[in-house]
Length: 255
Image 1 (cartoon, rainbow, N blue to C red):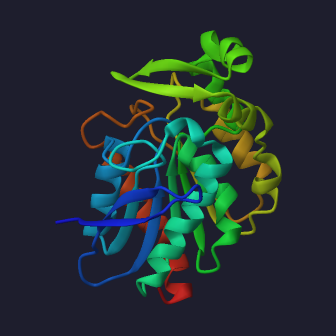
Image 2: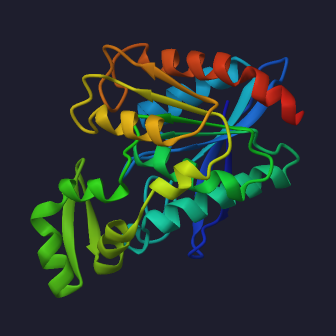
């Protein structure tokens, strides 16, 4: 069973996470960052982490501010907050005596782990699944509301059956966010995974990340997968690829 944990967000409210403990022999530990407006229990997060744990890589997955079981207001979050909280999740795992050797991110979480990686000393490798090259691309999900949010300061946004409050600070932060220099300065092995038929975040994003990154870098096409990895076996497949690819890097850190 996964272990439920809590730690403070960079904004103060408590974030709730689950640690999927690794099967023996333990090969390493990692942090998983979920996608925009998703949660730690989304298929991409839960199934990928469970598979990695079954292969000896313990994973901490957590709900971002105001999502899932976490406290706080989602509208007070932003890309910068998501990055900061990914770093805090890694520090929390380190405090348990299990420093993360790998960061894994799905969708916007993929961009977040790239931006966070150099702030986590124990990290030896980074893997992304369906990540955007420009965080501001998330605005297309709420584009019809953007002008109203900027004018009035906030607006309700119905997504996935839940109502979230879009705030001006969140919209403005995503418009400012830039990933290019984080990719250039990453300095760590990077695995870019993307479905060629992803209709939410096009595979062109993976091409831009891959071309911008320095070696060692790898690209894996997740043929037949949708963006959310809802098809049977797709998250597990992605996890098996990550597990095999990360093996030499996890052993370097002795984590």
